[in-house]
Length: 197
Image 1 (cartoon, rainbow, N blue to C red):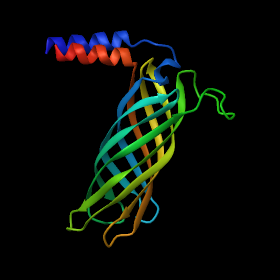
Image 2: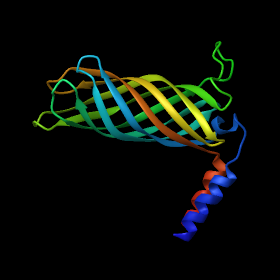
Image 3: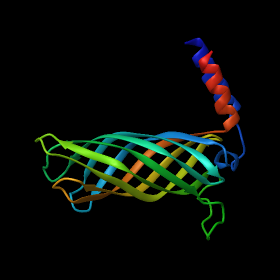
Image 4: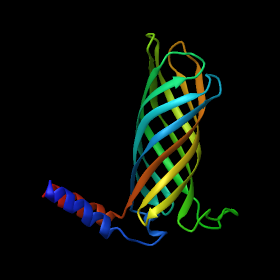
């Protein structure tokens, strides 16, 4: 346990890089959305409690591709029963450069981005109904870096699920709050080696 704690402290201390370095080719992004609010388009609004762990690799500067897992609990405000949601799939992120297309940083310590995802997802409702289908989403977000490699994130996303069974398109707009850790490749290898020892 002491080795794990020491490895974590060394990793965080060693990850100090410049503002542009964390989104350069070869680096990793790991994080999760933790809280989301649901504004239903055809299902009514409500609240969601869930996590969406994600990981991505920067294939080019500002461009990351990876995957996600979605586990959540939803309650719709129109009296509908509670539901459990799940999903797994691929995601992509594109970070805007400062000044790109007239979009400057809101603050000196953050970056705007666009995120999209596609995968398989579903829901299981407490009254016994359930569905599985194509899960997809797209939307803008902002990452505010509280340290050079840790960003607090807000993401507004259009999310949809096209059911394979008797349920058609189910869509909503969500506002998500979470975090991401940006790991340079050399530091990721060092952390993995330290934890393995």
